[in-house]
Length: 222
Image (cartoon, rainbow, N blue to C red; front, side, top):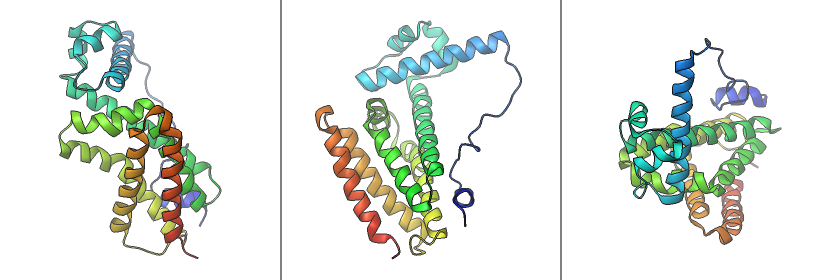
């Protein structure tokens, strides 16, 4: 089975599946509204990453976006609602990066490793590491935070495990058990990287990557 076919079977996004859908031309009012929302998201993302969720106020976010607080409430009902939107944007962007890395690889195994590298590299990003790996657990109830993980990172892991099983790269292990365990291992590696001090992050990345790769080789079919 070819890699593109495996990606389709495993439901991993590719460049083609991520191409934007052509829609109608927006009105000037809609364009302004979209620009305001984007400015709010950018301001909130920067502040949540720098100051943390609890220490960031809606007044600061509105000021950073150069809009009124009333305009902010026109788009987001609360600080938590705004955080949800920031989290969704960061998670979706990283999922796309991982999907592109997988699709660009020559074999399913190489694709899985490329996807792993893309994800761990994302955790080196101070914004992603702070917002997704640390602040999300503070800002959202556990059930909601867990649901966000299920929608993005866990779903991607399921797709990769399915792809490797279909390609015969690993034995046909019970899918959910395998995906849950792999997701937990990769998540621990991500937390190690995101939690490292800036001066130690490169070493944390290399150490975490080496351990995950060694574990991955342990389940590879010989």
